[in-house]
Image 1 (cartoon, rainbow, N blue to C red):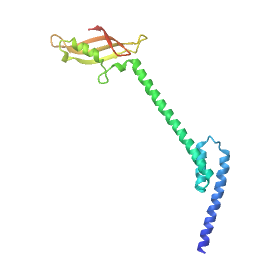
Image 2 (cartoon, helix red, strand yellow):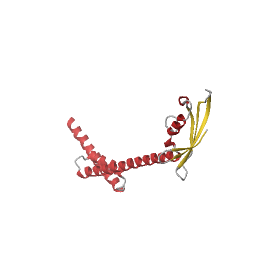
Image 3 (cartoon, rainbow, N blue to C red):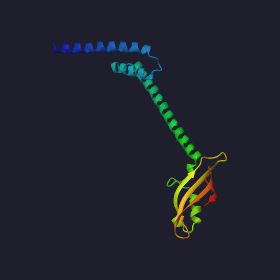
Image 4 (cartoon, helix red, strand yellow):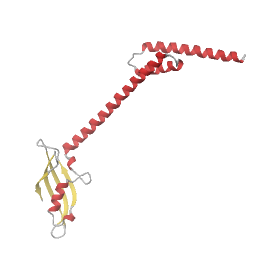
Length: 178
């Protein structure tokens, strides 16, 4: 009597599996091949019902590969967008002239060296600010740097240097020094 119930349950599960299999096969007929995820989901469920079915195995493998290819293409597209954005930011930075300035304090190192070399007390030099204008059609930037330094009487004065900076190599030509 007890073993009869087990057989009954097994038979019911097989009938339910067969009904679900027929339902999934009918659904698959309405799903376009290009719907990789939908097809993969249904064929995976069919493979759980009939693990030995070679057609289901091949379809799961086929759609699995298609999904991987789609993910790869999306990842490559994201990487390309990120790279293009980084290149755009770097180009904007170069157009604005920031690539020629120090990351530490925003000064132009060769102009600072020029000013320090021409001061009475080079150790008293203090950078205040550097402003740089966008590149001109000639490929140059205008730059203005303000600084503080000791004068001949020992007091602090504010000085200004104006220069032209080449965008290509960041070399500077002093045009005004006060």
